[in-house]
Length: 360
Image (cartoon, rainbow, N blue to C red; front, top):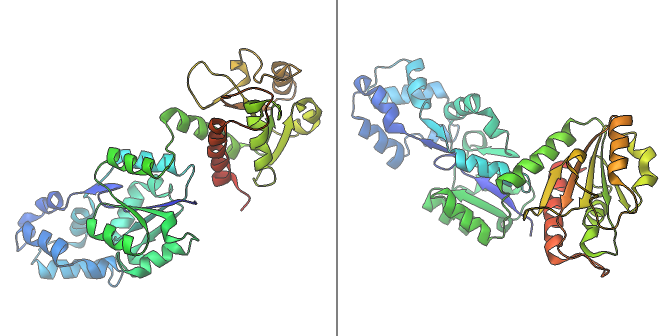
């Protein structure tokens, strides 16, 4: 099943503290800060603002009149907006998920808050494929219209994992068919996602794939080439992955099997080459990214030539940047096909490449 994620903003990606902000201006209010809090959380005081029905200045006038506030517009913006702090753990989770899955932000938020957040933490919002913001859509959760905008991205409701801190919105999301999880803390959320068979990269895996992502994006003319024997069990991992990526990515992909030397004239035309091959590691890593200088011996079990020699020629003589993505073999024999363990790793890597470098 395809998967996509929809994250709420408040109390999930960002924490916020209205009482702290109101404490700054309590002497300028004609009511107690608690009256303002009650109006915001129980009387939908800011609902028309979150739906984009009034401007920031009009909301300021409404705030000023309703709470008898003696405050300028600039003072209001300063106190109204400086209430947020990023939830770094959740943001790190989003960074890992986005390598494999589309990630969206769906939030009830007003224009002043969003503009402030975007100005302060633009890099966080750039992690998401698309933002669904109530003040732009003119609808707030749980109104069906805001979710319909999300479904226009081509996902069925049951394919979307929706994460929100509010139980009432979780319940409404389930009525629409979304796969919903209430956010309480990171560990609980990760356990929920693991039950859904969502792959979450470890720190090392994330760093490895981010290294590949940066190299492929920076290269002017990158190439991916898979090598290995297709009749020697998991030694075929790199070649099989390349065959499944061929003609589907924004860069050329070659399935060389055991004949990489036959493609040297093609390889020489590229400025960066990513080698996919089967490799044994000293630890339990499922895959690793490394440079040719880190090779202790030949990579695969079946090569009839020196990969180190070929890599040295390409790097020194042709000035080509090279990285190797090594895939751990679990079974090496003359049986056809990959082991279930290598198939699983191969599918994760395939999803990574298609997610980030697809022709579409």
